[in-house]
Image (cartoon, rainbow, N blue to C red):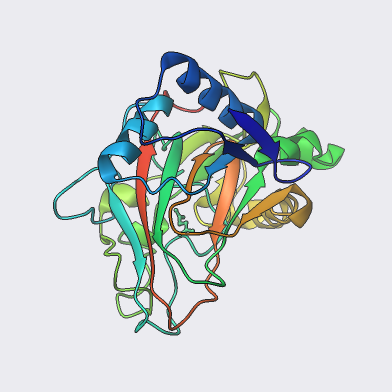
Length: 281
Ligand code: SIN
């Protein structure tokens, strides 16, 4: 297995591995270590079927079923991330910087995205290392977040804050709305530690983090704005240009991600699986 870094701070391309073959314990260990070191790994030209993808997913943790997103009809553990060519001028799934479902008491540990049909140009996914974001936090922001909880809300899926149903977003992924559970505030540390590597990461994101503990939404707003700006600096990011057959794995707690929406008129389909771990600490 060969590991080539994709940027100075995060992301690595793994080669010399055929994920359609059984994954030995040694290989699984190497893949986990690569993910821990780089927060996102991509393996090109794998062309995995769903069974291969699930075997890869289990290398990183038990498969988790995502709430609020309708899975594939024949497999509740898989989501088809799809935008049809006919869907123009609409939002896409994941089209803002986020950590998936950070408002859950135990948010996903990471995900696997398996590219089936992708535009020749556009539809890249971008990640940002929150390990580097934490390491480079200016002192005044570090002082505020260190040892403090941040509050996350599943606003898009709740009753109080959910956007109107008619708001235009891709109809190819069906999201559930109107769950009062999603209106409840969830507390997570604003700085978390990866139990495997011991590295710390900033754990706030613009979609779900609404305030900092001990502060109102209004008091938190300028601080969160500064944190989000820092967390999504292009310097800390890695942009993946997909080819059909590629598969990427990312750490959902040590990084943020963003699905670009620049490919109207072209179909894009990726299969997505998610793995869990114990709650972020
Ligand atoms: C996501 O998982 O947030 C979507 C990523 C993508 O479609 O590029």
